[in-house]
Amino acid sequence: MTAAAERQLAVELRSVPECPNLGPARQELRAALADVGLPPEVVTEVVGDYPSPSILVNGLDVMGSTGDGSAACRLDLPTGERIRAALRQAMRAEPATAAAEPSPVDCCAQPGNAIRTDRPRRAEHLPDRLRQVHQTILRHFSTTGTVPTDADIRTAVGAPDLDTANALRELAREDLVAVDSAGRLVAAYPFSPTPTPHVVSFGDVEVFAMCAIDALGMPFMLGTDATITSADPHTDQPVRVTITNGAATYEPAEAVVVYAATGGAGRSVDTCCSTINFFTSAPNAQAWITAHPHLAATVLDQNQAVTLSRDIFEPLLA
Image (cartoon, rainbow, N blue to C red; front, top):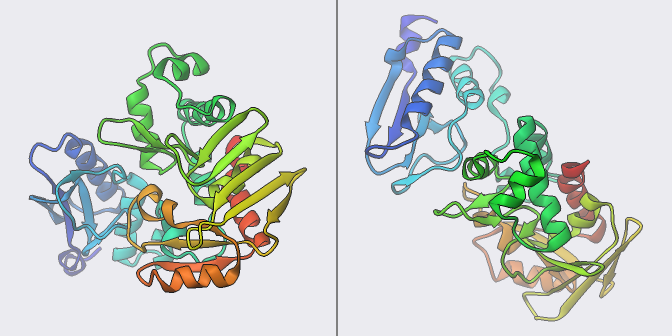
């Protein structure tokens, strides 16, 4: 890379004071710079009121967010893969599409873009032990309807010394789960630890789903029949879906799903889980969309909704 090109490349490492994750992020950045042949001097470190740590290349956050916002610890910590892709794109050493790895909410920010497949890919690329933890959480929810304890997870994966808090943080980085500021699970897609409008029944077990698509995905992920009960948020009328031998029957027969999101960057639980719902009819769905103009939304017919749900969740326990 020429000196002139280096001068045109702006790399910022942003953090809040005494950020505990700054050191690892700095190491990832330095390793990425070395790999693409750039000196560490191209980096400017800035301390202030930022999501922390954040790495911006020519003003663009490598993890796909805006890079702006108030001081907070990030769950989607910058990864070496994303840093390298952003640097290479800026250097024009490879096509711009090389940095187009989906962010955790690509499916939600652009709901009309057909099928989301990034969650299965993220799960597939987990380290073996972390994949075991993820699958343990999903199986525990499916058999008990409750959040697994630390002891449940350690026992299931055969690791009595496992740092479960760190494991949950790692899974949250990939938006496979979501945790609150105390490290407690607030989502284990497709399962919700707290009540939602979407109840899924597998025989004697009842669980809550994060959204309509998550509810539809559960029986395909688990390879079982299920009954989903929900309600149209526009009319409060009930919607029921029965899945038997992989076939879905909707009541009423005209029911549809609205696939909507805020369009902002962030976790699925924050940007789309509450806005993906069942509706008793397409007109009701469209009326609700019209009443919520700030959302990016599309109406999915029954087959589209089932296909989307299967593509997202069926591979997770395969």
